[in-house]
Length: 456
Image 1 (cartoon, rainbow, N blue to C red):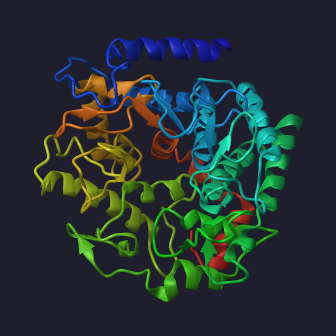
Image 2: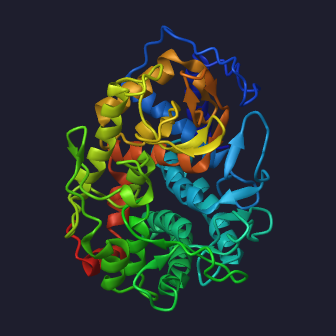
Image 3: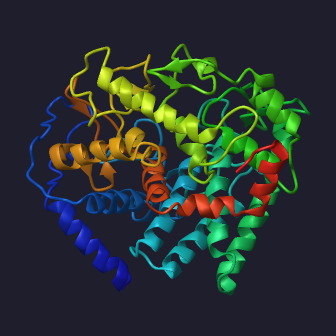
């Protein structure tokens, strides 16, 4: 550990430990003995709160990474129970978020540029040798062997959506290092090679005007998931159009993703325009909040528009609707309000659930509000302040735990990479715009946006 990182760790850890005893770390995820501590008298500035949560969530991907690959563990359970995947399972999409989170550590002085380069070099070397399927990685990978770890019975091949999230992170890292020293330029070159090897056009299933989520050498296209209508996958279509080697046509975007214009919505919810249609995926009017995060870690929605949407209006309104929903609290769940809000897919009372207005179980997922800082800075700060100052049992070593419910006196001392990753990245976009600046400078990305008719 270098002296810069060591000093920063000691300072931030002292601040954190002054508040959080982490006394609940060994409790069962099913425990009802939650002890939601209130009215802790701590005077932290907003900047200190932002520094602390960024450090903790960055550290999930730094200290908490899988040892061999350097990639993000799919989950970390403080209670040490792993019900669905072994500890060495790494997640492709969550690792993409983690690649960006590590840059937060560099820019905030928690690790050196050289330490980050060393980690990135290990990661890229692992990805070069890991199983790929027409250039796309699987959803889960065995971090020790590089072999696919099936996400489901037939989901043992390429996952184009998860690959897109990974590539978003890789291209951002390449942009950061491309004009550096010889080793840094070599890293950027290797990333560019991986990027060019993803066969986005293959995933149109023999030339259909839509991208498919999965393909398996054993099961072919049997997962049968064409990706269209608004959800978290905009970045996949942008990257597919941006590819210099395996690009899709504009028609695939217009007919597949935008469903010949049917993606547009003229409805509103809580007096906020929906802009695009969330309905195709559920009976709920609005989607879980991760839809406003995953594609926009690098893709800057500010000033971004095409024939279907103003994406800043879309993402802002998405977060505002969730905030207003919590204040309205139609189901009268305990705790909901202006300082406790945000629903998204996360751990839940029984396994995993896609929480959102209309499909609300009384479970709040901190990443929903905290990753929305660029859209709702005041409202997100209320949530951050409330959790860190008033409810210490909900925060552990790597930041807020994945989900909790005051209504059901429940929380889970567990983390998911896909939920922790957007927090430090989107907070950094709120504070400095760093990831939006880096990703949007990429010439291939700009070509893809131009090809699809975006203004940015």
